[in-house]
Each structure stands twice: as C-alpha cells, then as structure tokens.
Amino acid sequence: MRTVLVLNNDQMGHGDADLGHKILGACLRKLTRFAGLRAVVLYNGGIKLAAKNSPHAVELHQLQESGVDVLVCGTCVDHYGLQDQMNLDGVSNMDDILATLQSADKVITL
Image (cartoon, rainbow, N blue to C red; front, top):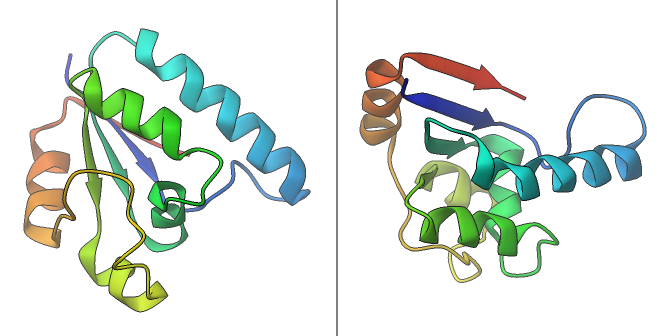
C-alpha cells in the first residue's frame, strides 16, 4: 500500500507546543519502520521541519535516504524565507505534491 504522510505544522496536535514538538520527533524517528510509506509532504508550517536548524531535520533526512520521498512546498519555503536553509534534496511544487497525493492508496495528515 502506498501511504503518504502530510505534515502541515512543525508540531503534532494542538495545545502545548513543547509537547507537540516532542511527540512529532518520536513519530518521525519511528517512521523508518512504517511499511508502505512512500512520501512525506510538507507544506505551510510543516516546511520548517526541513530547515537546517530544525530539531527534526535529521529524521527527515534519514527518511529521504531510506527511499521515502520528502516533498517540500516551494511556495511555502519562499513565504517563510527559508530558501537557503533547506536540509533536504530539492524543493517541490504543487503539481508534484498533488500527483503524489493522487497516487497514494492512503493519506495520513498529522
């Protein structure tokens, strides 16, 4: 099954931001064992996870190295002014993001 994970924020859930960052980190570390994960899509505040200074950039880089596509919204990167701070290979666009979502058997949004 082709699963795509969508992250649209730099934390998991609503409420305490420190807790949200902590549980998102745990989730990202365990994703390498998630069978069928084909892509992670980052948009809006989620793109901050791929910045060099992000505490979660390492986990995303490891996912990418393990063969998971990590798609970072280019419009969002421009909006947040992070063009020179991305820690991953390449920045994506909405055409690629939509094609990835359309080809998925399952989409999970956190």
